[in-house]
Every structure is written in C-alpha cells, then in structure tokens.
Image 1 (cartoon, rainbow, N blue to C red):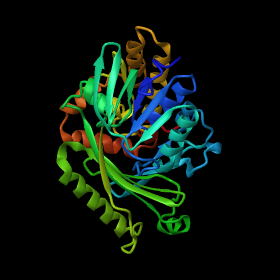
Image 2 (image 1 turned 90 degrees about the horizontal axis):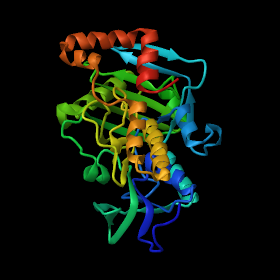
Image 3 (image 1 turned 90 degrees about the vertical axis):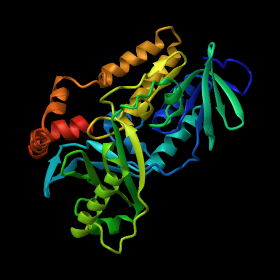
Amino acid sequence: MSGTSDSPSSWDAIVVGGGPGGSTAAWSLARDGARVLVLDAARFPRVKLCAGWVTPTVWRALEIDPADYPCTIQPFQEATLEVDGEVHETRWPRTVSYGIIRKEFDDHLLRRAEAAGAVIREGTRVQAIVRQGTKTVVQAGEATLEAAVVIGAGGHHCPVARAFGEVSQEEAVVVARESETRLGTERLRELTARHGTPELFAEPDFRGYGWFFTKGDFLNLGIGCMGDGGGNDLHRRCDAMVERLRADGRLPADLALEPFRGHAYAIHVTRPRRVSGDGFFLVGDAAGLARGVSGEGIGPAVQSARAAAEAVLARDARAAARYAETLMDLYGTGEPGLLGRLVDLAPRWVTENVARTICRTPVLRRRMIFEGAFGMG
C-alpha cells in the first residue's frame, strides 16, 4: 500500500488516539507498508488509569509473548469478589490474566507502532474532521491533513466518533474514579495477603464494583458504576469504598495515595454507535465496545483494531460493512435480548437477588463474572 501523494500532509490512514486500539491499528497497518499517522493530544508516557489486566487472548492478538514484555507485569490465576462483606475466591489451574500499568503498556505499544514505521505526533489535538470526496480532512493544531481512511481510537469522546459515529444521547455510560500509586512491593505485601490478585467489591445495589489490585510496586484502586446517578453518586460510592478499606487495614490512615481521577466510557449494551462507513472506522471505546458489567475495554480495543486494519488493507467496497459485521460477530448487536429486557422490567430487589446468587455461586461466578464479563480464562 503506498501513500496517496508525496505531501507530508497526505496519508493512507490517520489514527486518532494512541492508546492500545490506536497503536495496534497503526502497527498493523505500518508493518504492511501503509503510510500511517497517529495523532494524540497527550504526550507519552502519560497517566492512563485503568484496573489494568490483559488476558492471554489479548496478548495473542498483540502478537506479544508475556514473557518478553519488558515492563511491569503481574500474572495471576485467582481473583476475589466481596459481596455483603463475604469474600468469595475463584481459582484457575493456570494464569488467566496479567496485571499491567497502563502508562507503561500504552507507551510500549505506541513505540512499537513507531518502530514499524508509523509517524507519531503527540501533543496534537484534533479540532475538526470532515469527509471531502474520497478523502477525509483532519484539522489538527496548525496542520491540515488528509487521508483515505481515518481510524477513531480516541476513547469515549473520540472526535472521529463525534463526527461520523452517530453517537446517541441514550448510550449506557459508566463513570469511574481511580487512583494508582507506586508504593513498593514490600509495602503492598503488608497491606494485603493477596498481593498480585485482583480484589473486587460488588456495590450493595450491584450497579457497579470497586477494586483493590496490587501489581508489582503499584496499587490500583478504583470504583465504577452506571452513570445515571451523577457525579455526586460516584464520589459517594468512592468515599464509602475508601472508608471500608481503611477500616479493614488495607488503606492505613497514613498511606498517601495519588489523587483520584475520573473518566467515562460507553458500554456495548444499548444504542450502539455506527462503527464504520465511508472513509472511517471506530475501534475500542470510540466504538462503544467496553464489555457490559465489567467495563473491560483493552480486549475489545485490540481485537477491533486488528479487524479495522485488515479492513483498511483490503481496500474494497465492502470493507466498512464487513468490519461492522465482524464486530457484530464478536460482540453482538449491543441491543438487549429477551433476558435483558426481562431484567429491565423486573423489580430492583429481584435483579439484586439474582446478582447476589450469581456472585455467591462458584460455577456461576467463574463463568458469568470472571470469564464472561471480564474475559478471563
């Protein structure tokens, strides 16, 4: 695949967003000879809060052996889920996922794309995107750029999604607050007997969950919930979780944490976005692909990025439609099925009791929560 002109403003593909989805798409395209430009408003390595675990399936999609990954990596084969003060443990006979630090992970993937030939422009914010004939024109900073294809990988508020994705105001949105602090392995081992294991906490109304995850030298602490309660609801939940952790000794009063930061993302359950069309593809959170219940987004970002790159390289009239079909095969339509509609109609106490039963029953917890919602196993 060759460049569309000799001008440095013209590219085969422009990728907006340098996270796991954007860098994976850029790497896939560049190593096949495409002229690829990646734009990101941040400068890497940048802080990107995330509970942060990567399953074996995702490592395979990235074509990276976890043993060769040079940054913080925490393999685990067990996880806990606390419900109403009771801790339920789930174990596997093998490693089911690997904890990572997003600041390191994202930078590693972006540099890999750069080494493959992609051009990276950090600290560059996209102001406007329009389709003109067979080209898409991107205004970024002082530059006017054009490409045959634009890939939107800029997260929930991705400008490509806003321009072309038919984003609905009725999307199901999750809001989260997280803190990640480097405390040292020895200090973290003093805080919890489960160092290296994700410790999850179901919210009393089952509309979200919190986590306490020690990865090497780092503590990642956070909470996420459905966003219809507003920011005050999220802050209240976060404060309550911190109080519980202080009470049981996992957060001593003198322990200094990095400030909590907030973010939001759409989950793939209702009113899905238009993920592809004439000259554009959306991947990961920009496409609203985060898993329902868990909000896990690294896996969908990487898998959709590989599929988008394949569609771009195919260069045929059905590429965009085929990409949308691929995402449907992988993640479904996003519309609730009969069971989902029945859950919506059921009284809150019924759904809470069903959720409580699933969390407390070992086989259901393993299959529906950890393996189903989080993609482990």
